[in-house]
Image (cartoon, rainbow, N blue to C red; front, side, top):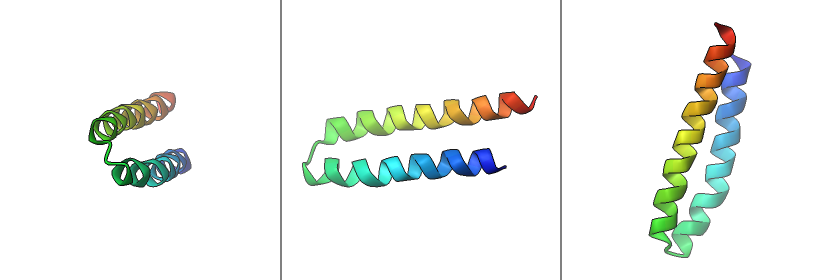
Length: 54
Protein backbone atom coordinates (compact mmCIF):
# COMPACT_ATOMS: atom_id res chain seq x y z
CA UNK A 1 0.00 0.00 0.00
CA UNK A 2 2.85 2.39 0.75
CA UNK A 3 4.28 1.83 -2.74
CA UNK A 4 1.00 3.02 -4.27
CA UNK A 5 1.02 6.09 -2.09
CA UNK A 6 4.66 6.86 -2.89
CA UNK A 7 4.09 6.59 -6.65
CA UNK A 8 0.97 8.74 -6.40
CA UNK A 9 2.79 11.44 -4.42
CA UNK A 10 5.73 11.50 -6.83
CA UNK A 11 3.47 11.93 -9.85
CA UNK A 12 1.40 14.61 -8.09
CA UNK A 13 4.57 16.56 -7.31
CA UNK A 14 5.79 16.30 -10.91
CA UNK A 15 2.44 17.44 -12.26
CA UNK A 16 2.13 20.23 -9.68
CA UNK A 17 5.44 21.75 -10.81
CA UNK A 18 5.17 21.30 -14.56
CA UNK A 19 1.53 21.97 -15.43
CA UNK A 20 1.38 25.56 -14.09
CA UNK A 21 4.54 26.42 -16.07
CA UNK A 22 3.04 25.07 -19.28
CA UNK A 23 -0.26 26.85 -18.68
CA UNK A 24 1.48 30.19 -18.00
CA UNK A 25 3.49 29.89 -21.20
CA UNK A 26 0.31 28.87 -23.09
CA UNK A 27 1.97 25.78 -24.51
CA UNK A 28 -1.16 23.71 -25.05
CA UNK A 29 0.40 21.06 -27.32
CA UNK A 30 3.18 20.41 -24.83
CA UNK A 31 0.64 20.27 -22.01
CA UNK A 32 -1.39 17.62 -23.82
CA UNK A 33 1.70 15.53 -24.63
CA UNK A 34 3.04 15.89 -21.08
CA UNK A 35 -0.31 14.86 -19.61
CA UNK A 36 -0.62 11.82 -21.86
CA UNK A 37 2.92 10.65 -21.19
CA UNK A 38 2.53 11.30 -17.47
CA UNK A 39 -0.69 9.29 -17.38
CA UNK A 40 0.93 6.42 -19.28
CA UNK A 41 3.90 6.47 -16.89
CA UNK A 42 1.59 6.49 -13.87
CA UNK A 43 -0.44 3.55 -15.19
CA UNK A 44 2.67 1.54 -16.03
CA UNK A 45 4.16 2.22 -12.60
CA UNK A 46 1.00 1.07 -10.85
CA UNK A 47 0.85 -2.04 -13.05
CA UNK A 48 4.46 -2.84 -12.16
CA UNK A 49 3.69 -2.59 -8.44
CA UNK A 50 0.61 -4.80 -8.84
CA UNK A 51 2.67 -7.32 -10.80
CA UNK A 52 5.25 -7.48 -8.01
CA UNK A 53 2.53 -8.62 -5.60
CA UNK A 54 1.51 -11.54 -7.82
